[in-house]
Image 1 (tube, rainbow, N blue to C red):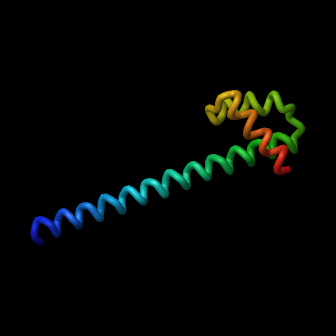
Image 2: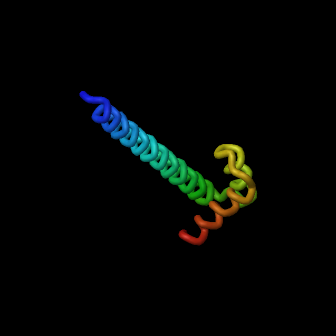
Image 3: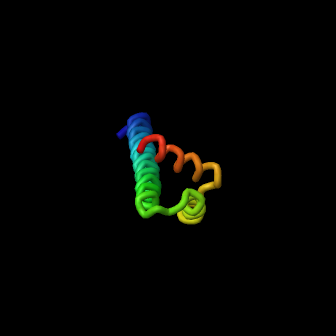
Length: 79
């Protein structure tokens, strides 16, 4: 393989690896979001007070209070 061909091949491999990593990260993020919504729905069904759900979201998912409130509000809106 000549040098330009090798460079093209390495560039293609690098692009594919970058795409794979991006897809993996997007999949992980989607899974975390689904987990948060399931967690919230389960707590709502169990009658957990909203304040306690927010505390638990902060602890278990390392969310800020603002983020936890937003997720909880989305669940009430979409429920």
